[in-house]
Image 1 (tube, rainbow, N blue to C red):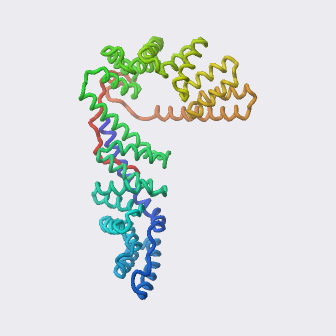
Image 2: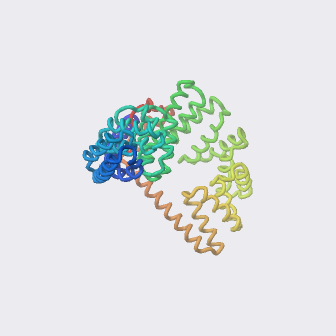
Image 3: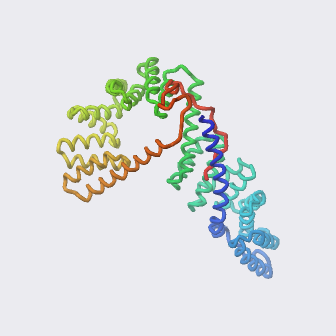
Length: 436
């Protein structure tokens, strides 16, 4: 199933990439013309200078008007008069590139870069031309150099997407992940960039999982990894079973009691949730610096109205990690409950600053602001709470409506997928992956 989904996703992205390139070429042409070296005069005779100037003006108009054949001819005539004319060489390469004559474009771009290696727009186009003619190693070199220097957002994004595709195809997942993260900063709401980022990290996780399985398939840590994968899939029963097997093999396996406690806490079983507290305490016994376990124990004590014990856990959690939004929220709620509204506001404001998506923290901050008489702030926080709540409900509805079925499960969601032994497909790194 996973292989099928990745194949379909890759095919979709490849088709979209082709249409993306055809759309952006014309949009970038004006930008690229302005960013290329100007056609210089004075490198030939005075009579030739006049001819070069006339040809350059006409060629630039032709290039701007997408009369690419005419523009190419004019630039070739300029180069016949002045073979070292960098501007004409670069623009001829651009005209070929826009025509889809990538081998010819690549040749002109390489000559231009030989004259002046720091023409980063040209390096980007040279790399893209090389990629389209199958010279991936050379393309990566030029695209990598260009991506580090090109500043115009559209060209930088185009360069990064092509570079990501080649790196992913080559199996260089670490650099591909770095490029994907940079692309997300450029286009944070581009679904294809986010998908690519997800894919490369999933590939890295699969690679690590398979390496661990090959190293020691029966190790306690291997069962913990299986539990992590099941928890990620939402199969908490399977995750709990896998974590228990890990702890059977190594009762003091670092992090195992914590992840078991987290899985138990999210279980629909009251007995599982009750057991979570004991696992958090075991996690803390194994690692007294486990800030998350401290915070979770504080939340459990808060829910049972044991304010004194909850305060101790939240205080310790904040000593270990002052920037934990959950610990700040917990302490803020505790202070709100005790009537210390000013102090509560400090912690709750810190919580929403650290995690702006925490709807519950916005709600409690709204309550605190209202108690303190700051009605404008109270309204702002309540509006934010309602917005985030609506977003979450829409997201939940979207996932609920997805027509997905998991092989091995019946309509109730039960079946053999509860077994704690999922394994990834063989890595698809090396397949083609591109971002439109």
